[in-house]
Image 1: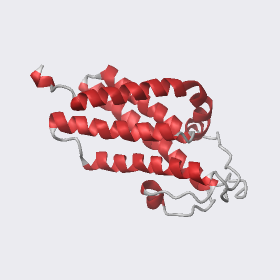
Image 2 (image 1 turned 30 degrees about the vertical axis):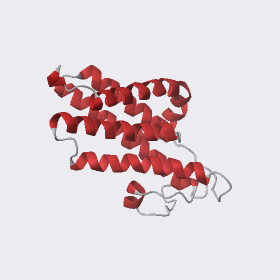
Image 3 (image 1 turned 90 degrees about the vertical axis):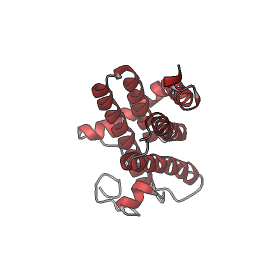
Image 4 (image 1 turned 120 degrees about the horizontal axis):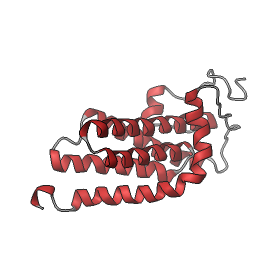
Length: 190
């Protein structure tokens, strides 16, 4: 079971904290762990965005952002560098916009999530480099025993080929709107 990558006892080459904030790719087990972690990070950002939208009254805008981050997580799981970079850029720009208008855009939680989203970029970038002539093991089999396995392992494989073009449009709109919010006129001066 361990040889096939089916058991949880497959040893990782680094600690959990290092894998979270500064991942390295030495095998496909590491890559699978990092892309799965990226999926859950982006999904958490999407869920928090939806919850905040429900309490602040901006449900449509936050639903748009939540869908963007969820699809970014699916893209990260499917090893898309564009999705990882877009998620990090949108989250950073969002923090800058909040900082511009309220003065409180960079809290501890936001900085931790920025570091985690940056780790997604690093993990996907290293996976693209490591796939060319290095010693990569046989890819771990994606499981579907639990709901978490179905969400993180099966859904991205099914959904990403169909939804990636929708994601690209959402990413372009999200980043363009955030850039307008950052560099456009202040709301109070309108």
